[in-house]
Structure formats: C-alpha cells, structure tokens
Amino acid sequence: MKKIEVEFTLNGKITSLSSYPNRTLLDVLREDLGLTGVKDACGGEGECGACTVIINGRPVNSCLIFIGQVDGLQVMTIEGITPEEGYHPIQQAFVEAGAVQCGYCTPGAIMAAKALLDSNPHPTDQQIREGLSGNLCRCTGYTKMLDAVHQVIEEGIND
Amino acid sequence: MWEFDYYRPKTVHELKENLSQPGAVVLAGGTDIIPKMRQRKFTPTILVDTSGIPDLEFIEDQGEQVVIGALTTHQQMAQSELIGDVNPALKAAVESIGCIQTRCQGTLGGNLANASPAADTVPALLIYDASILIQSLEGERTIPLESFVLGPGKTDLRQGEFIHSVSFPRLKERWGAAFIKVGKRTGMAISVVNTAAALILDQEGVISDARIALGAVGSVVIRCRQTENFLSGKIPGKDLFTEAGSLVREEMRPISDIRSTVDYRLHSASVILTRALETAAFEAERRNQ
Image (cartoon, rainbow over all chains, first blue to last red; front, side, top):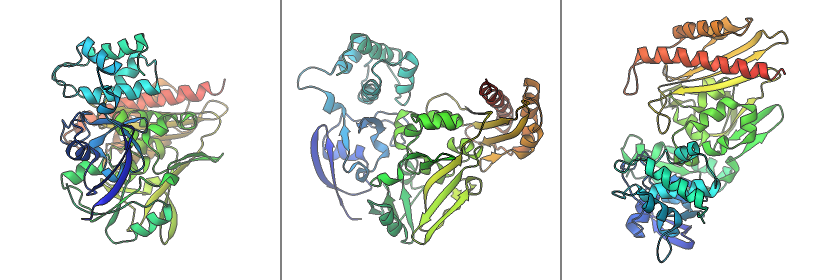
C-alpha cells in the first residue's frame, strides 16, 4: 500500500502529513499528532461518539473517516477549543455541573455540544438531547451534561 | 485495518476512470463500510474515495421533480426546506438515522448502495416512485429504485458503475406522506421495522392513490401493492387504516434476528402503518383547506 499526502487545517493550523490511506482520522490524531483528547471507546464502530471532532462546522466521528477524506477540510478537536490557560466555557460548565466523572466521553460530548451551540445558540431541551444522542456515557449519566449545556445557554458564554 | 489501493478523484470523469478498474469500489461517507473493513467483513482491493467531488452533493428543484446528488448527507437533506415541503416522509426518515455525527457524514448514495433491508431512506423514496441515475465510463442508465436493491447488501450496480443521483416526482394537489420507524430507542438504533405511506385524495375526498412501503420485513424494502389496492377508491378513516394495518401482514416475510422477532415485526409494522396512514390522510385533508 502506498502512502498518500494529506493537507488540512487542524485546530486553525495548516497541517501536511503523509499516511497510509487505511488509517482513520482518529488514528492519525492520536498516534501521529499526539492529540489524545480524541478518544476511542467503542473500537471504531461509530457507536459511542468519544472520538467526535468538528469538521467544517459539523460534528463527526473521527473513527469513521479515512485520513484522505479530510484533505482540504477544517478539523477542530478538543485541544483546539481549549485556551492556553483555563478552559473553554463549555468545558468549564461541564466541570461545574459535575458532568465529568471518569472523563473518557467528555471531550467527544463537549465537541458535540459545541457543534450544536455553534449552529443553534438557543436549542430546546429536546434539541440538546438529540445533539448529544450520539455520545455514550457509562458513568456520569446524561442529566449533568444537559445541565452543563443549559448553563452555557443561560450565561450566553459559548464563543 | 484492511489494506487497499486508494484513489481520490476530483471530478466525476476521474471517478468514472478510477472505477473502471476491476475490483474498484466507491467510498462515500464511510460510516458503514469503514467498520466493516476494520472487521474484514468488507475487503475491497481498490477504494475510490469520492470526498473530493463536490459535484455530487446537491438538492435540486427541477419543478416537476426533485433530484438529490448521491453524496448529499442525511443532515443536508434533514435541513433542506425543499425536501421538507416535497417529501416530509424523507425528511422524517433522514432525521431518524443514527445520530448527528452519522447524519453529518453518511450519504444518500451510501445508504442506497449499502442495500440494508432496514435502510431508512428507501421506504420514503419508494412511495415517491424514485429513480436512480447510474453512471460509468460506458454511459448512464436510469432505473426505478424498486429494482435497484436485489437483496441484503446486493444491488444492481455493475462493475465500474456508481450512483450519480436520485430523483422523484412531486405529489400533486391533495396529498400527504409520513414515515415512522420502530427501534430499540430513538438515537443510534437501526430500524426493527420502518414504514412510509403516501395518500392522494380526489376532489370528493376519496383515496385515488395509496402508496405503502415497509422496511426490515423481508430481504429488501417492499411496496405493499395488495394493501395499496385495498385502500384505493375508499374514504379515509380510522377503521379503514386499522384494516389496512391487518391486511399488510400478508405481504410481509419478516425474520427473527438479533434486533427483533417475526411476531414483533408483524405486530409493530401493522401498528405503525395504521399511524402513518392516519398522518398522511390528515396532511392530505389539510391541504384542501
């Protein structure tokens, strides 16, 4: 198998790399680029949402995308929304609401919440539930995630 | 992960050339085939990635009919006002697929080529008598969607061919259409049974055209013509639709599998068809006012 050249914007920076085409975006982010905020919980089935990243404004599972498919696109991971110091307002709200327990599903859930709030700053409770329905949590539960997103909406702090 | 030769064409013509190689298959969104390749259940030798071809991503109003490019995502269809107006069953179907992450990546062409008996877009397109435009380096052909899917995972696509787009005519005057599915839960659940129904009423309020499709009750999504004929020429009503729900059981050949049983599928298909017909009739009658 021949390697391919891929160029895309990752967290605001143009990134060029060479990779085998049968590697997923998730593989490359974690193994080549060290962005381990992106998680794999279901083993690449697209069932859990832990590997959610935002591509051109849309939340997608990075385990279901071959690296060649992101050529020319804008990819944002949890690292890209985290400021140098402190947290992004959605991260802060998740912490304050207690929506982080083991933390494994948290980056994916936050990226799904971010994509939702970017496209719809005032979603209804039902829309929040739908927006997070692709993100499985096995310890904290979902109520606190909903609380966190409601808090962001009420305070108008998603930037 | 399975190994393959990889191509990423930038134009439809390049796609045709790449696909003309023996063994070449299309990668659309990838939400279905990437996990299958990881598990070695799908092992193509040549993969042609279509993500660099914007020309196959469109929803077009051609007046009499609507045309949807094969690489249009479920989310693009869900957000399309045109599709909501012209085919509310399709809108409901695409909104029900997977979760936001899979809807943003999965495509219409992928859903059709994947040929799952539980594919949610298929019933909503079958009730509109949708056709598929298939292209290859040799030329193109248009076939009814109904004859495109041949069995689970099997389609009429031949070597070198790909789905270009799907088109369906508008329903006219007093019409209504609905889609309902039953799954284990709302998010991320593959349909146990799904149905789409459309009704067209004449000036007297009599059903002039009834169209019913059921998914996951056989090896392919089916049109239920006996039940359609039964409804035709009758006045819409709850009792009629309940009877249609019972009659339709004779047209189904469901199996028991990991997702459900024969009995549950027969029963729930009957119930959701009755409800879909009620919704379609309500919408058709509302259009008269």
